[in-house]
Length: 343
Image (cartoon, rainbow, N blue to C red; front, side, top):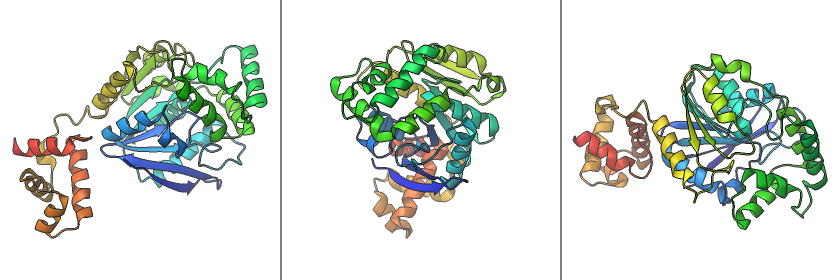
């Protein structure tokens, strides 16, 4: 699986980086502040998210301003600015109606977007999310200590100070995984952005919006999460149409080998495809049915293209539309679609 990285400009001229990979219904990820589109792709902490979500959906994700491949020389990290950037990215990616996955500190932006654009959001997944603030948000002294650690140790080669944040995010990780998270912190942004964005995030509070967000929501939260403790039940209670799934984990970022990870994947899959589980084959066009019947004969895409005098790319595009209409994704989508048309 590969990703396609692109760039666009916010309305104030700041360069924003976004990427697309996978297949299936569109899923826009509003991720946490620690992200880097390129380095995450080789990550022992994040790569399973990219692989497994890419099997379920066409994933669109991005680096926020000040982070990753997006422009670093910025000063405004407010919620209003982050929401405006998200609106720009949605247009750049050509999305019309799609599911949104708000992760960790990205959840307030996802919630604000769903509130502002309910006609475009088909469903809202909140994972490790919160409606405002973040780690130590209710303890001013502790927060000052965290900011002091960022200022003192963010850019140092020695990860002593950054390891405090790593331990909070993935306490059950291996040393290799922790070392990668240590390094991601200084790779993803500079010290000034880390401080300014953290201060801005602690001023965010979208709780007044929650009762007005009517889109279906799935709230996934680790029971032992120390970054956003207690927020899962609070979000699920405040949202009008939400279901809560508590995950058996202490990690704010679920790791690939823990039992909670397949539960996460199963729940997201069921949520994304809840409206398509019984999608009839009658929804397909005549050409799409024709392509599926040829696939049922055992023809590959090249052979189908030759039989119908189409380009291989056109056949692939028709197949992607078929999977989307039938609510199918992943490695078995082709076989499932063929079985559906022959039923």
